[in-house]
Amino acid sequence: YVDGQPVPHNPLELDFAKNQYIRAYQTLFVGTERMGQDKGIFISREEYVKGNTLFGFDLSPDLCSGEHLNLIKHSNLRLELKFSKSLEQTVCVIIFAEFENLIEINKSRNILYDFGN
Image (cartoon, rainbow, N blue to C red; front, side, top):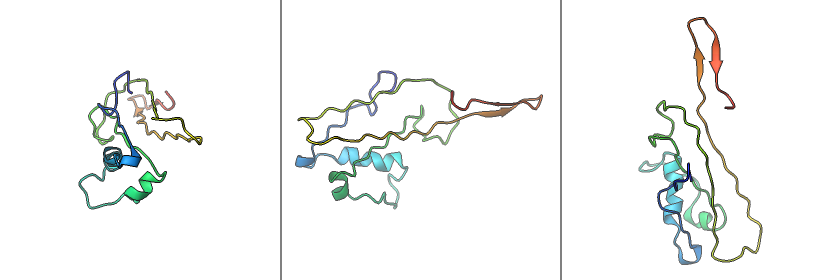
């Protein structure tokens, strides 16, 4: 969720036992900008099901993956996971995020930056 709105717009509902995971697998291609290109992601569908499960989301306002300068916006992110049955083993969730930072040199030659805000 970004500011209370689900991302993607419909939740990803995976059922590996029924081979229902392709939409989630596709997020890797979209998130790594390889969708529609003749490039792989080096995680096969078989490996994806066996625990190499990753998701990629472009959360930039214009969905350009950071190729354009967007206005600075402060938001809240939330991750929700729901499982059809209790987990037998602990799962590890790792979130990797990239953020734009702004460096400005004004007419007085002062260097202004927003790292860590």
